[in-house]
Image (cartoon, rainbow, N blue to C red; front, side, top):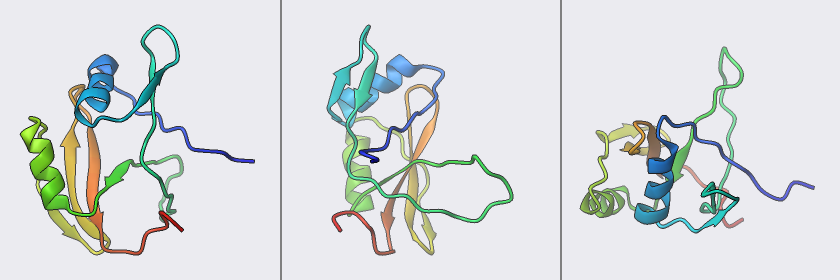
Length: 115
């Protein structure tokens, strides 16, 4: 039986990104050994979109109020990208210390979380 999802985010500076998840986003973590942190994440959902290629995956955090979440993150010196309106939600990105970006959006669609 499937009991969870393990997401891997590749980074040029994984230690900085781990510190960001721990200290800025405040995600609880366990140390799997030698400082290798594995983070608990908020509830998740998965969607399947059409593509010409397989093995493409994206990571988005969801929030109830994008404007307020961005303000809170910016107060912690987190850079957010431009806001765009999509059919499925209001979207931005958050910049990770390691140079990557993760999507952040306020969904306009029904969510499967809590069902």
